[in-house]
Length: 498
Ligand code: GLU
Image (cartoon, rainbow, N blue to C red):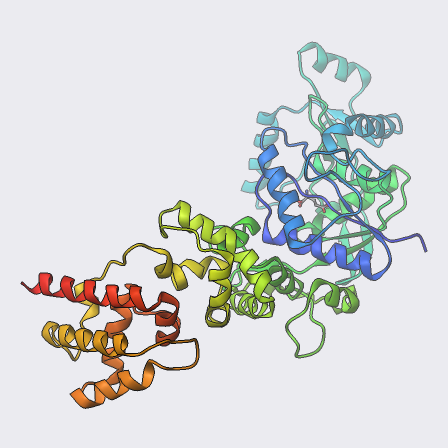
């Protein structure tokens, strides 16, 4: 058995897609499980749509997820790693030209002079007759004289590979035996454009052979391409790798996952503050399951359990709520210092956007960890939760501060009394609850519902109706700022009603 060599072959024509990350992960897992090598190759022959920004997004995104490749381009622009390079198709053009020459010499491929208009007319005729699109093979048997005549008209040919009729079968490692007839593949296949640039079906085969790929693990959307690849491999005299087609990722309505219905860019999840660990954990479950009830797995833990025989055939629905839940679980597992490190860029972003007025120190965030760690669905939610501590003043909306059962005058009275009660309490500390008993006693003495009083205090001191627990919030604010914000809220209410 040759050593396992698997690959991910993204096209840099868009940002890193959830589906590409899932395929990359399954390839990595398979390689690690079998002591193999994981290769990254860039399919960048679509020059018009490929950009270096997308390339960067893909390489950095995978790296941020911890999906590291053994061979391939360097994400920071250094030289390619690995002995089978180059790992970018645009740097491999002579390999394709050489393979194309071989196919031509063996009459397995031929020049086709049909114009786009002619092909279009052909397609429309088939459509009208309710037949599937298929190249007629008009140029399959041209004589040298026919070709010379077309050339003299100025026509430049594409190169077509002869697709024979007859069944093409393979044993898919996920789906079992797959058999498709050559006649269903759309007729002879264009493998190079008139300007000589090679096309996907052809480059993928040459690359997989050159890079000694043993297992092609990719999305089910490629299932119908595989017979074409097998025919090309055979024609070129290459060994066939094993194939494994991973289930489609679906929107909640079970349509194929799309940008329109789901967030598909991995970079956006990272920017929202999803942890790489949580994304990887979630992606692993898109088509695979460990066969137990456990749900939280690190990449290393999945690596020990993963194999293709536990991959399902049916589509995998992308459930954002579940990802969000997993993310919260992963945030809870971080050490306090690690959480502070990971929150820093999100707080810096809040500062830049003017949502906070100063950057908290690491120590200031560290003391808050016990009150926020359980409450952060994403790292990006940190500003919502503790931003009020790092703003010079909070905006208090009079419509929000007055509890439903209260009027403005009661709220003013409540906040003043609360102010005096808090001022009378000495030192306070987290979880020691020095503030709660006297404030509850105050509410009782006045005949107020404690919840109303507490909500008025919360809004007065934070500007928000949802915060970490009130007394922890007041401890974090400190005595002076708490009193000042209560005063300011009272003044605002008096102004508002006056
Ligand atoms: N560039 C192709 C894609 O991203 C690669 C497909 C393959 O793995 O063969 O879909």
